[in-house]
Image (cartoon, rainbow, N blue to C red; front, side):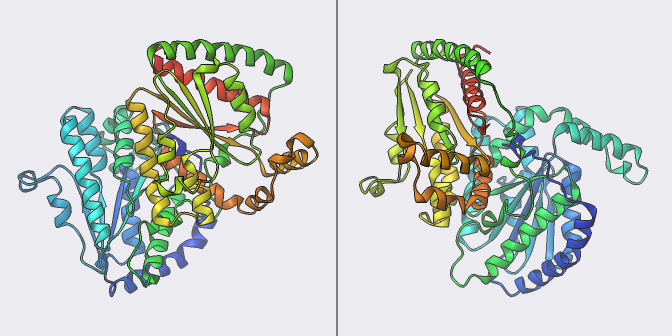
Length: 493
């Protein structure tokens, strides 16, 4: 989840300097308008970089009117707090309607305590459930809940700490806590990611903010807060879930998961054939072993129209024995399927132990085409992230190998493939007017894809974004990813 957010977003000094004055005016005006509103704002700042969190909180207090902000840092519980339920201090710190509270910390400490064994699994799970329930209550009561996890890769944190220690103006900020936290980050981050997934519900999602570049971090958090407050103030009816979600990932010009994909990667035909034989032989062996051990496999394929899903899937099935797999082509739900929860039809096709099911289009249609085309209400597609995560988690817990693939091509390559299909008689059925119409919403899809990958990536159900401008490369890259994942699940690595 956190690694996929490391896409190198930056904001230059000139851009930052130009943006800040008006942003500060707008934030102050929004805050003053908020004084007469019938809802409070809760802003939670957490992350794996203590310095970044402190800087972000200070920045918010600088850019907004601190008189109307209650900043609360959650460190070790006091004796008074320790004598009461864990969430007592959170409830006590909640802001009144028309006011704003900034909550700092808590998340990484809980993750560290779980990593050290200070909190057992039953207690930890209950804490997560209570946090989720509290959030739901606040949102239902009208609170605007905005949560930010500030992520800085360990390598860059280490460099920043060394530089800060040498700086006489900032060295005093650094102490052994920072180095100790960095040393244990490998143990703690997987637990932190679990917290993010399990406490990211409708109306209170976590927004992961890449924090290597301070200017990008500050502008992203501030703009998200401003947009959410302004949008909420404009609402006439009762609040719906997650106004923050509607603006997350839409800061103009920012990098995305797809923008970091190298589409120039390619294989020539001879190399492709050699690698194909090797990877298919490996997949065949692993599939037999999975069948013997009762390990089911679910492969989910999404991608741009004409992205090459069919060709990739055929190379996978070519390595499997006919009785071991099924390919499920997913289209718009039928009238019968629409009578059920949208996940019902996918549950029907979960494979038995040792078998393989390949979905050509998937349950992610809810957060892609249904979201963009308006077929699903905002509350429905926002809720879907958690429903999807739960579905995939249940598969993984049962011992399935679950992998998800997005086949990424450029707009130019897609257009070339459309035109080739139109000129090839046996491929003309693949191209429709809707394919061309979808191209007009490319940028909307990029935003949706970015959020989809960030919100639904886990160790047991990973997203693989495959460069697919070159079909040979895409096929081999996908086979390699599947073989690597199966080896892990089968205990061969």
